[in-house]
Length: 316
Image (cartoon, rainbow, N blue to C red):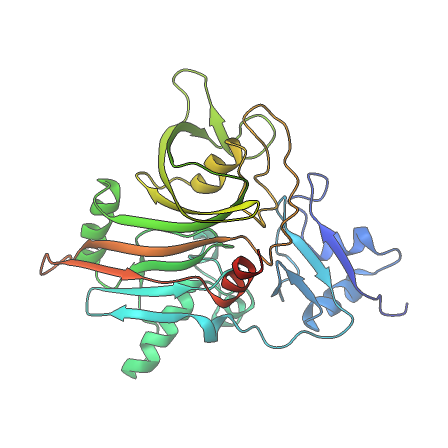
């Protein structure tokens, strides 16, 4: 059959958990398995703007799959992982959007070639550190916390077991400082948001519950940095670090993060359309501070919006 032209697919519940190759076949009549895998290996398929070469990649609700007319350029993510600080015990990076923070435990045994098909920040950092030190093999970096895949900005990896243990303790005890920038629609007012988060609020995605004895406590402190007509630039400081916490809290208040394809529903169940034309999820980890695990001095880093979000905010 002739090679299909471009298509755009926003994954819903009917396609969730299907493989990338299967989803393409479901959308393109008469596409064979061989042809589906060939389109993927030819760099013509992206998810969230990122080239994916793994036909077995499982899709999730909200994924934006695009089939392009021509092959995409090489994945630029490795070149945009920027090391902000590194010493013997930890490394702080500026993670680009659409890059996973760490690997799932089921992927730990993957070969280097398979890992290259599905990049993760921990592998890219490991490769950079190994090349700097001219050491054979793979430098081990240890996760301390995570950023959502579509979220950009500062995160820390430990390089020693002691560093990991002491940093995780600070994150668990809420003594580490994590601040994010988020662009939301409407006139947002500063507030402290506290709720009990559950994996499934009843519609298949994470959210808050009012049922006694269920969920985990999540607290987000939100302030206002600047306003534009119809939009607010919000500063969010985490007291807890639950999955998708900021996105859930803001959406349930009626202020979903611009560009968020998943969390766009108020606590009363009504949906909120996204009219912002944001180029990506407008959420960025811009400040990170904690006590150094060895010399016990306070260390702090800040990281302003990447160019795509700064341009978006300027346009608003």
